[in-house]
Length: 475
Image (cartoon, rainbow, N blue to C red; front, top):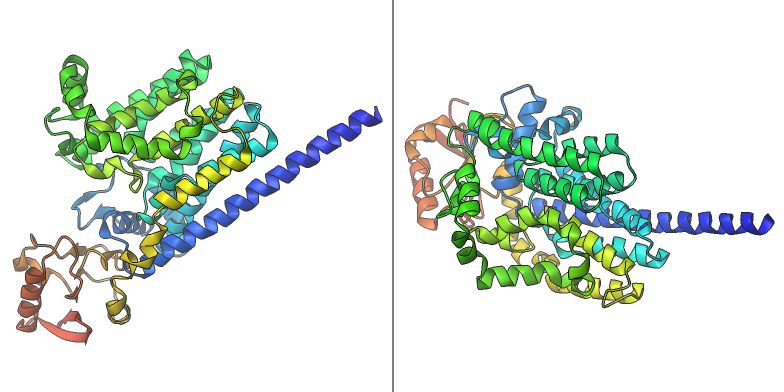
């Protein structure tokens, strides 16, 4: 009896020690991600799309105003039906700050290591292998890179995908349902992944209740979001349809053509950019990717197909958010392969070493040494100019400066398409002539500057290092 108690206590202590290790890893990782995204923002490298977009929407919700993103022109639900933003608004009531979004994103991305570790333990991996799987997740390059690319609500769904699989395997249907509802609220495009996950749970995992819930909820929300909710707030319908030019002019037409005209699919799939993208996805986990244990990847097929079929290049890299729903199921394939002792690498040390090498090769931390320092020469001047905008009146400014000024109902972006006839609609105009941004040519912003200098409506209130602030005289 004493030996059994000692053995039980030893096991409990070992599990507790592993839990503490994973907890420390998650905490350190979240802190690094938060510092990285915050630093990028402070260096004026965040953009109106997508950080300013979500920051303005949440700010307006918190103030009880219509959440119409002014430089987009529509209610934010007309974008991706991401109603989860309403749950974030109370934080902005406490204190309106974009740094809430950086903290939420960093914590959400890091927390995925916890269910990854638990799923590895559940699959029967050795304790050190389970901790290694948590590190495989934390060191997966997309997890770091997506944190640097502004803010996207779907990152909050990444750990929840892993958590709902764990809940399904533990027969916790209530928590599974809550998790599914949460995921669907993060982005309309996650609904096909949820439906496909339900199919996998139903047919392969034999989790009939959870599988049916996910299949029904994912399918129903896809139809409601794309055919009812988004068109209601944006009459032109789903904006991303243009990325699939040649496959159809609407979501349902694209789906129909993919089913009844498979030739369209093959012509889009077998391309060099797609091969490169697939290699990037698999490289960090190729050692544990086995076709014999590929069943969980069924849930990743819809998003992978969307990324392969599009002409939009940002959907084919490890920088943007479009591969988020693929990562959890890549990890599940790896866990199943390691559990079956069929992976190329079984040693936890070598697993971690491979992950570190891939992280160093594919993570974009090097951006802090060059790309993110481009605006250092106008940094102080831009800070000073922003400090002089002391009201929440309307602002016209550069795309990189906009996320620092989105706590107001009207902020617009300077671009080559900007109609100068609307200039008088704004109370402040903030220009960085030296760094106009990708949407505005140097000649365009120089012409706008000249017009403002000759204007009888605006007066110059700040000028330094090619940064100019003009304020409406009546203000």
